[in-house]
Length: 109
Image (tube, rainbow, N blue to C red):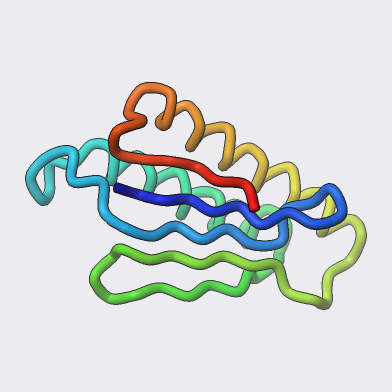
């Protein structure tokens, strides 16, 4: 199962951690995993390309872990735009969770 932990403080997302494997199909055919990966990396790439902000990223080689956090040095404009993109990421992940809750769960901590 993919577990998504969203860390919020002061009405904003500060960190998102994705861990585990969906295992909804054989390797290379796991649609839940592919969807989660596309949504997550799409959001990270959007923040970088559209806002010019490099998020703090930690990954593990097996593909079962992604940690995304916002750097401490950020302008108010970058913060607002990053929040919008990360909240969009969460909405997309919730859409996947709505259909495939046995393979993905989202927790707000």
